[in-house]
Length: 294
Image (cartoon, rainbow, N blue to C red; front, side, top):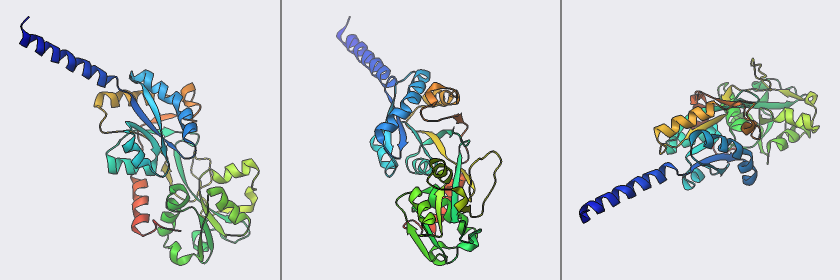
């Protein structure tokens, strides 16, 4: 065989091997880790393994810290991300991630904001909050701040001007306890927090009222605001179309009875829900200058 031909065949072989190696590269699965990164990895590993079997590539879990999702996703070269809706908006707008599916959970995949007041306060509607002390987390929380502020803005109420005080709390449970202990007249929490505290025996629901209470068919939790989609499965624009389709099909095949879904309390995945209501809420609240409040 001529030397030139041998060199050509050698380079073709190297190219084939490199391409095969790239095809077998791990897919990095970034999951939101609000508390403990190691716990998050363990919780989501069974789901990652299920996706791996369906896709034919190893899927490794990477924990994304709550306050640095964008940076972590970029630094860790995350191919797939499972994050809440506000972080999904950020990853889509800033890094070009594409939604594959919406995640379903015990409440059907929706959540919202709750405005909680003391039952003895006389507060029943948004307008009753004028001149009152309100406890909240801050603009880093959609379910415990953004959605409530948007709700109030739509009703002509500016918390900066109309509240007597905005009290920052260290956590949502602390906000509720501030109302219980008379340190605040009302507070903002996300859906499910009040019921969880009552189930733990920390509070009695009879001591509180839901401001602007709503009843949404099929949604079991108390809420004051509109309901919004909660979780999104996203894929990086660096992932090829074929792999995206396999990931989507794998996600849609997961059911609430799937053992791989049990640790994360996932009930399955569905076609991505419209994320525009979340984007609009974020944009309107931040545009109004609430990014640094309370």
